[in-house]
Length: 285
Image 1 (cartoon, helix red, strand yellow):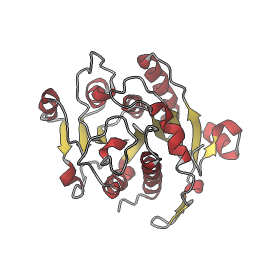
Image 2 (cartoon, rainbow, N blue to C red):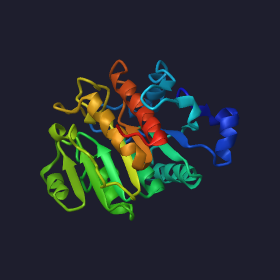
Image 3 (cartoon, rainbow, N blue to C red):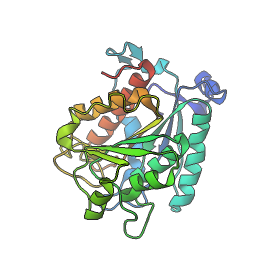
Image 4 (cartoon, rainbow, N blue to C red):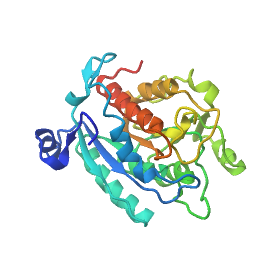
């Protein structure tokens, strides 16, 4: 269970409220680890994110809120299997239950492919993503559901999505950079992320926010599948999450694995909490 959240499986009062559609946020783990191209282990991501959230204080001084009082429910993990398409379909239906009950899904990955299910469930106008990679392959190694193609899939397969904003990207194939030059993609390089401000760009639009932990420089988050140097500092990720969260109807933190001492999982867990506090209060600074 994510610390401070009610465990839906234990029949708590908050869990009962969730069944009645009164939960504000619903945590779902998606330990998919099917298409990792370098270091596997994202199947352990949800568990590690929950574990390394345990020492965090319940109280947030910036927003004057307690995490445990914000209506967060943890539904546990949706066990992954080897048919990615079938798994994504099932995951989408699970997340839609939360959306239909006016709750914000908080998806813990798992490889980045699971963001496709999150976007399908939320049906946003804008997909905002912190990521080291463009993830704009039409298919990677012949697989259109590869984690390296997830932003392309969201742009092309989720009918509501009008544009993708990719923050922190610093690598991609030639074909991906050509796709990124289209009008429906904005790429903000790492050196410009600290000054990025969505302004009115997200106002009155449905937004989905995805955090691929490899957006952070690997010195801060080495526990991820495809590390890429010259990345973001944790405070830069935090500031983006704070700015976007009040506009977002869904969130995920993905690509955490077990190849470090918990740095990546701790950062992901903290960003989940920053999202909840900022969304609940409407505070973006």
